[in-house]
Amino acid sequence: MKNGWFTIKEVSDLFDNTRGAIRFYEEKGLIHPRRDEHDFRWYSIDDIFQLFYLKRYASMSFSLDETLTTFVKEAELTLPEIQTRINKREQELNAQIERLMQRREELRKYRRVLQECEWPCTRIEVCPDYYVLTADAFADMTAADLPALKALIAAMPLTSVHADLIEGPSGWRSVTSLGIIEANARAAGIPLHPKMRKLPGSLAAVRCVRCEWDAMPGQLIEKALAFRDEMIASGKTVHSFVSTSLILVHTQEGKTIEYHKCYVPFRDC
Image (cartoon, rainbow, N blue to C red):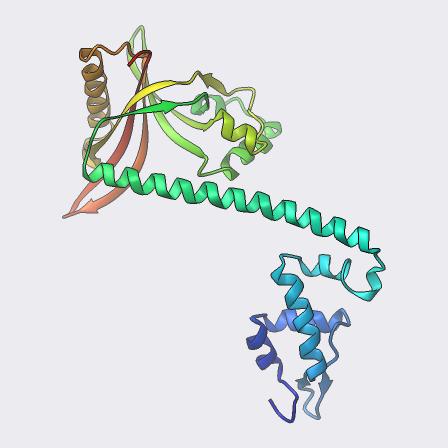
């Protein structure tokens, strides 16, 4: 800084903007630095105050393009038109806040599950209506299916990956799936892919199991089916599948361990 003039580095540091962004403001005619004999840019106090205004709109989540088409004299919008844009931005922020709150809740759930990995217990959960897209369905997909698949991926962590053990005439087989609770999909406006299969809501016995990586997948199947047998022995009328989801893989004392959450759906308490 020199005699009330600022270098581009100082302006960049003050506003946490890149030098490229500062030059872009100049190109747009928003600020007007002068050049010295070495062609270095110097920014006046007027430039700094102009950047204050731009920063203010940015702090309210307006992009530079939105600022240039709304809040500068060239925009020529009426007050009602500006208020309409502000209302639209508020709605967008409300949607973002809702998504952040959902992510926070998923973090809290994950923390609770990690605690259950350390101290295994059996719980009963209410599992709402759920839609799954199996790995087998991916083989038949075309480019037209990609937008729906992208929406499911973007919805994570509301979307989850799990492996289901399904009982059939030839025994048990494992099917990997991508799934989401129906209510979450509806609330987020996520289209349910035609190839997705609906699993009706039910109660489920839930337990976290510890498996050695070298013994996978056999050890997981063995423990999941043993858990199912426990529920049958306790008088539960179980469904013909067991669902598992990977919680964590980590190495402990030179041994790689996997933790999985097992769900045994049943029809009665």
